[in-house]
Length: 69
Image 1 (tube, rainbow, N blue to C red):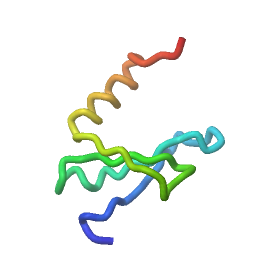
Image 2: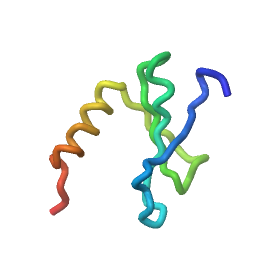
Image 3: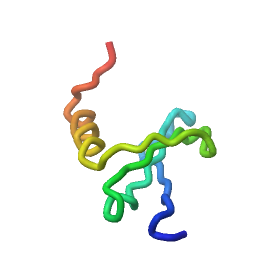
């Protein structure tokens, strides 16, 4: 693995039958990006977010801003 290769990881809280995502936060220092993919389809599409946007999203989730109806 090179510094430009994503190192995929799932949250330690992911035990809900596979409905989770994987992130590659190792690219933040070199590219300022956070790639995200569906853990059930690792060879599928990857969404890439600016690190600041992903950080804001995570903070919003932790604050309960995205509660389901």
